[in-house]
Image 1 (cartoon, one colour):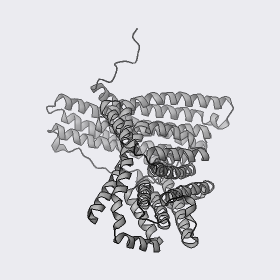
Image 2: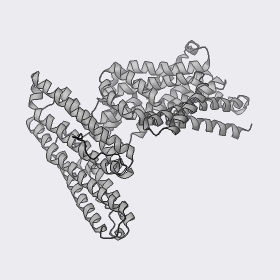
Image 3: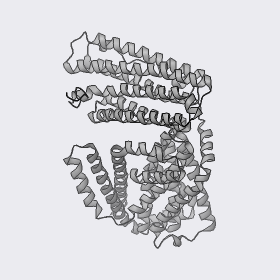
Length: 552
């Protein structure tokens, strides 16, 4: 077999490994994403449980990177502290290492079982959850199959004359080997895939233990860099967790690399074979890093915060460019005009999403400049709302099909609801912000946590509503309406907890009682308006009842 063909087979096997990992992660996120998010918010308050939760989440998602980005978004939204988020990501790194160990076993029998069962589930049912479970099983089957393909594809490399030269050079230059492994891992966007590839090559006798451990350390550096790079467009507060993990895990891998070069530790103690030694070194490194990282997570997160310069956004950051997609020349072409109106409504959605996110930040860091900026953004929403209504009204002068007329009414209705959401934020919630600022009030820790969790759910539902408006996906619309019922239960629970604190004589609860209750009410009203965006889609699919009342 020629060298080019060997490399092609190896590249194909690695590509299948990456794709299979993505399939498993996508299936878990779609089937259990909401459940995981809701439960994590409660678990991550304790450092020990945060480590185990992070490990479990990384095993489920087959990715420490996905876990880091998710936890970073939680920290950015104020659901958890940045320190707790960093501890959770350290646990995720341990869980990712355990995934490598699990996949190192002989699991060949699972390939046909997972593929048959997963394909059967995916093709024979229309239930979303079962289809995603089928996707997960198919992904696991392909994942194990890809590892077998990597082993088979690398077998001819034993007879290669060039490979021993490359391996010999890298073994004599551990720094270069370390950096190459980091770059390859970043290109793979998966430390699991990179470490499994090194272990597979080591199993064929192509990589010695000393070089393998250096490559594994490089994979750890590249793995923590992935989330830091992918989060660069996120709000600063969401970037502190990935950046903190990069600081801690990156510096740890460099220090361990220096120790290996200087002291040459006895790697044979880690296992009987080279692949086992590499995998155990990977697990040991991440477990030790978690133990060391827990007590210093606070200072590391503070350093990361200074690096990304977390601050209250300036007025310019709230600005939405005054551009319009409402082309007057397309009014006599209904399909094109509706597309233009949809684009403009999406811009209103973006402005509303910014307003929803920023208003909760003003509850913590209120200032006149931030309040005025949010009010100015609402004025822009009002102007866009008026322009869209006028544009669609002028479009209806021309002949429309039934579907076009319905879409026109749907866009007008959605735009009205979005404008009402902006009014609630400015006319109600900003009043609460001013009241809290003027009186110097503070929420109780429990009360503030309830508000943040409720707000995070509303923000997530807002994104669902905006997706429904564009995609008209019935499953997403149904999920959005189900979330409305869940938030109703959250409101009842929050109010009960608040009154319990009042009975216990909490001074802070008494001082902030009206602000707390009114904020929950306003957020629930916003969520109801957003959920109603899904009604036309469900009605069109025949999935909406005429009334919630029981027949008399």
